[in-house]
Image 1 (cartoon, rainbow, N blue to C red):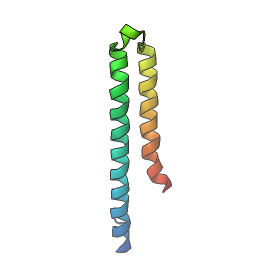
Image 2 (image 1 turned 90 degrees about the vertical axis):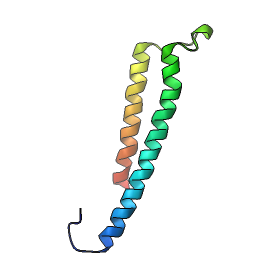
Image 3 (image 1 turned 60 degrees about the vertical axis):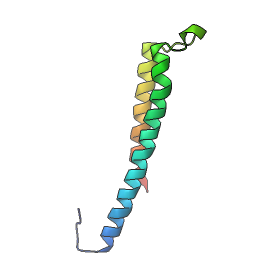
Length: 79
């Protein structure tokens, strides 16, 4: 939304859109990586070797993952 009639704001808006897209891709990669690792652990894929993720640890890791995504998204305000 343009607040004033300065044409330079359009350039800023385009740059902000590109930065937002980059953050979206970063967060998508992070979430995919987390799910590729954590979900099989929680499902017990490595239980044969004694590696199992408890439900409490899975919930804690999911909360941490959500916080990481939120912090990464809030970094848009910094730049």
